Image (cartoon, rainbow, N blue to C red; front, side):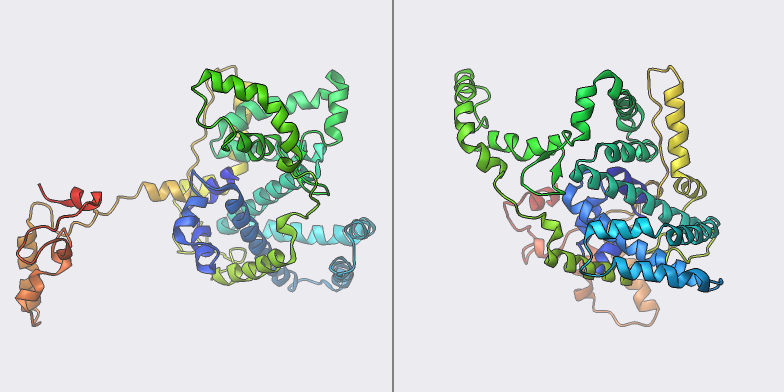
Length: 431
């Protein structure tokens, strides 16, 4: 999740989500920054990827309209209508897909031709990469919730080059390749453990039902760790040896009483994201996000990589990096796995965010020119206004906020500064 946010940061996604009303500007920057909230950011990425997929499909339909599509279009439309019938169960939909492989193969061929036509345009390539990354992330979470071990390993391998390209070397170049190599040998080295993992033992569940598997680390955070931080837990007594020992000896007895209620094993409620109110609200938000995108990125024919919100053009190095993220990651991954160097070479990916950071920052509120006092600056402005034929009230002009570093409301009527307890006022008080 963080790798995706790092790659697309400042490429226009934040502004679009804010314009659609999904979040405020500060929240958007936080979601795509270093300290993102998992659930909040996942929700935003899901909405954004759904909107981008619909824009992609609109561009595909416009492209397909220029070709001879009568021999396959009706067949594909018939399959899609069957899949979107309300009374069709998930099992029946899978059977329909398996029976419709010839029609789906035709559709895949047409979409491959469409994708090849996009490779000449950097903006469309970049957002196609975003769709690929978000699909991997969503499939990974799906397999986690379903307890599908084979799918978990497959998507873990697919995300490797993107983790490496984003600079997450501890996962992409060190721990995850070793983990996948060991898990590949698990059927021969530990047969019983492999069978247990295939049965879904790598996730836990806090409720009955399906599609609610939780990774072990998240399960521990929400249960045992949360319980230890309560009033009856370890919080506040970790430095007291006698209190710690008492807690350790009595915890099995208290846990036996509260374990079932703590884990909510008696609950059979569905996942909060699968409720009709949440689904309908998200569907409306997807439409708003699509409306906030002024120009469809999959129909943009500009030779430059642009920010889809502001129109800012990326530097050549940024364009080359962002349109070949997977190749950059695969190259670094291959070099780290084939070399015997102890120190890992971390990828420094050039993005819109790094490009914006390199730009010179504007002065923080100082209106006076270098080497000139505020009074001189104010006199120059007064002279310019009078010379251009404008009228000027000198008394009112002197007290304007734009001619002073400090706001006039911070001062008394006779010039002394107002007293206060706020640190911001004390810090701004002139020495």
